[in-house]
Image 1 (cartoon, rainbow over the protein chains, first blue to last red):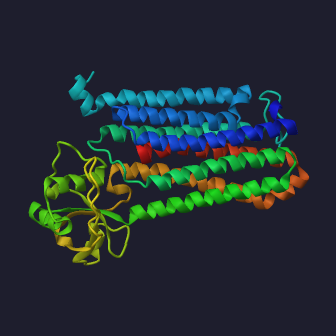
Image 2: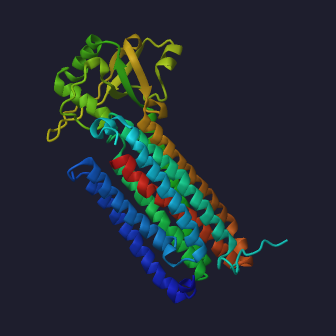
Image 3: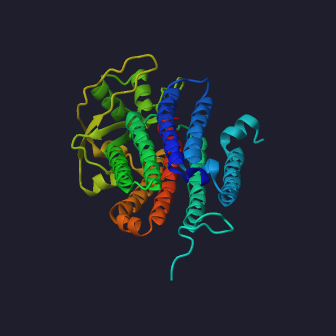
Length: 109
Length: 303
């Protein structure tokens, strides 16, 4: 990583790491706080919690794992992983048509 | 023969080999945890009632903070190696190992709390109602709803469980763990000393403690008796599978970092860049472990 090659650049990066670490702690507090607030339905509470978790994981992956400035080989690996992960979750959601709730409420559609 | 590309980047990938290796490994890990998350979703959507509030949120929050701090310390270790500051880097590596151990100790305590917690169910309504009266002074709808909520987290507006269908939660007076009905029978136990949990109050109402007293329960009156172990219900099955696998990752990461802590100096003196790369690779694994927990914590503890 070219931007991490000089001591000055590393010192600058350290300030970013500290900021990101603090943001993650605040994000954890926010997750707990949000879980005690009713956003209208359980689905909304789950959505809010997953959005906060996604932002936190972006911070970890982007800054701590240096994914914001990586080489193409790693992006290609992760793009493949993302494709299969989304496919797996897509199959999971698709299979929910089999559950009684959906059969009763939506007539299996 | 020397291992190629431990320090110098390959021309085609632009990376040293270990980095490509760890990312390929992490890609497989995403699918491993992804499959288990998928199982979690299917189990939860397929359940009539999904337990909520059975885990200790303050302890879980603290453990999340411990993992975040450890992510900062491991990246600080790498940054100090980049600045050729081995002494300081070693301190940060030591702090990371301490955080990993703290996380595992706290998790063990949490597990132990579950293994020594029980759910019981009586064979018939009369015995169950008598127990409720003895333990809580009443077997009315409010008490039954509160006892039901101890298992599933929320007080259901419509559902009024019959006494024999209620799972009453609590612990044994001697704090014994891992027991079930078959083990009690094998031990020829005729009675247990059961300390029932205080019923969860309805929303807006204050919790009235029932004194944490032990009551004698005949084993022959019980239809169900189980510690909160994986086989108790699907919630605990997926909870222990996900957190157990995650804890195994924490343990594995801690082992690697302990090796680097004690044996890293020699490599640092010989090939400092290679040592820096090793810490970077271990750090990438460690951040991934943190990243998984970022999703596990809300999914299992809060939602």
